[in-house]
Image (cartoon, rainbow, N blue to C red; front, side, top):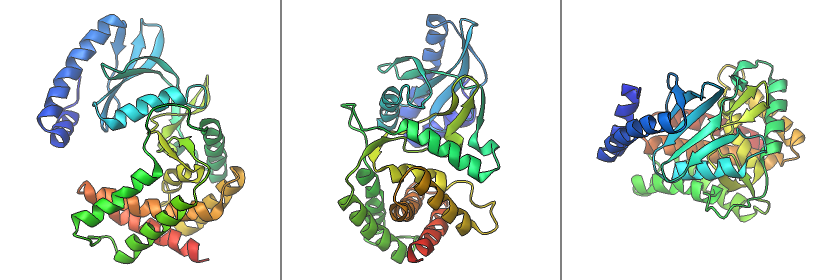
Length: 299
């Protein structure tokens, strides 16, 4: 049931431990099938976790998620618990030691990608974000925006103080802006960490609901950035879309327009740095977005 391309990806990333984990997942799937009376469907398109739709006792639709044992899955596990009842998909069962979570299946499950009207999309995003955001109450040590920002430092280390393929002026500006923003940050919340179009789904029973949280501590403005960086290339003049999104979200969510733009610039460069770190060419997209945010900063 485990797709070949997913096996290869995990082995490429984690080596022998990835291969061992695949064998573990196969055994766990057989065990959970009997223990929870699950019927498996075809796995979803997989990234770094094994995720498959299931039926529980032929009565209820659900989603089984098995995560590779690392900090990312641990953070998601705790975030799902902390966000319960606050616009997040419901956790039905879990076992942290075994590394699996059973979630409610959101049906029909259309994402925000399915809506073309930008005003409606922004309204749904704002409503979902408002339900999610709250002061951190868990004792779990979530990553912070500050810890994420160190990805730019790793870029410097990789290129002996340089910036590699990313323009030096942009990297330096992001470093300075991060320092300024983090030094003046006062109101920190538990954030989703990856709240974009594909992670907000419609459910007939629950309405628009978030999935796949990363769990991040920071200012609310930062949780808007992943959304703002999505679905912009289809616009003839992308900077107009970016400006409209920023102004609208600042108004709907009572956020700082200036901090939204500044964090947008910083995260674009951070995203580009991550892409370089992973050996991908997505850094070009990050640079393009940073240039647009830079233009907005100068207006």
